[in-house]
Length: 262
Image (cartoon, rainbow, N blue to C red; front, side):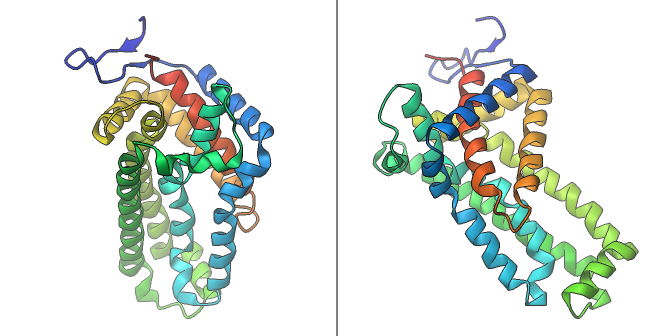
């Protein structure tokens, strides 16, 4: 197939094709259509995000949580692909014309791929924890010597001191590295595990190859996801109840655009 990246050494490894920005639009349109088809189900699956956001907002009363608030919110992008597994299953079933009631979002628990999905989810969680530990270390080497005593003092020092701007710049650079790693590992791996009988290693390899074959377009997808998550985080992350399901369903359609069908 023209534009397909073939794994000639192993025909069992799925092939990936080159896509364009128009494919991202098609994937997003598909995500919106799926969300319209069963919005209450999708929102139900994603309520954990605003609930966690409200919980974190309450923790802001403790200053010691404040420096990690942004890393925690940003970290949702790292574990989002795993949290959206149920949405991929609903999109898959709707595509096949099968019953797509919300109970089927938990079919992955009975799927032969459940342990591979779980293992890949643990890997993303490890990346998430590593990001939080790194963010905590960065705070201690930049802002902690200023010893702000409350959230207001922390925010003032963050934007008005050299130490604060060093934390902002380095935090975003390091966060970018973590997000690229997570994108490479997971952009199509979870939908692939649900769709075909492949191992977690093959799913990860296919995901990495999809990014290497389409670096610019996948970078665009990463920017879209990041921008949508930022928009959904205002106010109090409540918008994520809509943003997350749309992105989840769209990821399934992106998988269909990238990975060559059997």
